[in-house]
Image (cartoon, rainbow, N blue to C red; front, side, top):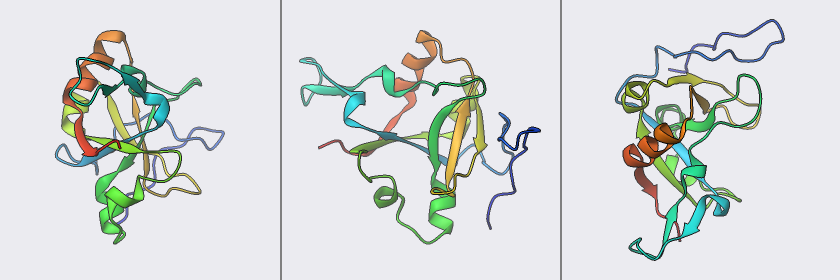
Length: 143
């Protein structure tokens, strides 16, 4: 069943919200681009995902752009294939409940070219970005 439409402001933009249909155990996928990967001699493969990958976009109500795994699956698509489109080379997965436990809101924010798009809103402090790195699970390995 598709998600209910998100709340909109007077300009028609999605307002930051915690979408009640996105349950705590639902997957929230963050796409990783080559710009999010840094060299690290201590990492097993000599590279790791930077905390730069876990921050909000620019703008007054901007959040961290994500894809909603359950929405993708309900549409009959393979989420691991769906999230890997250039320029994205990998992905990590959160559980919505873990994000909320860190004080973030997890909402539905469909885009014209991505009906499974969501946002994670909140305060992306250095400490919270480090916490996001800790709760992120590998989803699509970075080549």
